[in-house]
Length: 402
Image 1 (tube, helix red, strand yellow):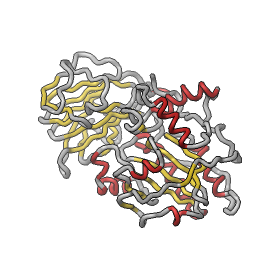
Image 2: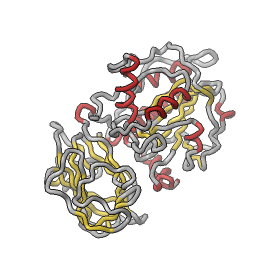
Image 3: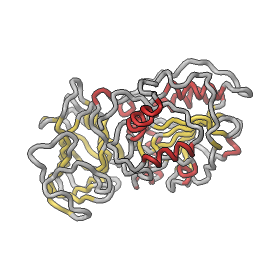
Image 4: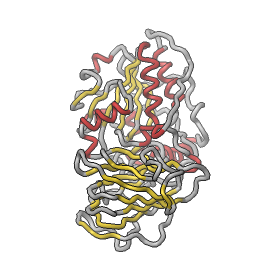
């Protein structure tokens, strides 16, 4: 299944979140390629970020006769918003950033926007500029935005990492740290990113799974703020200048799905002899890779969540088709740095360099996060990516594309 050509998301209004959950569970066993749109919890299947935008768009939209771009026509600003449930308790959060702990009772009388995120999720990063803009625009009109940080990788459970990421990303609204998935389970949530829209009576009135549908989401906020008993707001939409990681994907060129590198969820590993699990091994790369295959060369240990380089000089190769290429990675030992160089089709990534590459096509992994290594100019074609690590001690988790 190829990546979607537009960032559209199915716009059906479900009568209840439990009905939606049953639908997901009925199709959750289908093995899908990861597509751009959202990160899918492994509690549904072992894929992460791409289920809704393509799978639901194809299956459910076909069933409902709704194929076609729905970004601006999906929901009228004056459409009736159903009651999907009650705002669950937030007491399962282990810590709060930018705020004292908030309770359901304290939030009654406010319009609340709940945003599930994890800081390495590229789909959430592309949604973030809109959430940040809504929080700023509507804060004096009764909107409270709460980010629920539910981690995927172990290093995302480190509160210092979350605090650093939220500061760098200029998030100043309240953040509930949900390391134990307690809030996640209370919402019966399955996706990063996910938005839940809560009215003044503490009722869930709308949801949005995955990136996209920003105009529709803002219209829902405006409608809830304008309901009886609340003040009326203007109908204008926020304007965002999304750059870097936050820039929208080049959907028309995106043909590479995200891929994990740990053995639990990896696909298309092409090094001869396959993978040896949890033990050091010398790997080699084949002479040629097929699209979306990847391979190792050098001394690596392939673990459940990540691969770890044991000796300097190790490489990762990936045949991809996308404007952007990112790696989730970082040094094994906190406070250390691992130097690397990036090649595209055998040449230093200079013209196609991403945010984390210098003018020589080189960079350094200094912390565990998402690194943008390639942002290539048009035309977008199949490319051979290679990264060579000049130091040992790096662990690499996942490729994402945009």
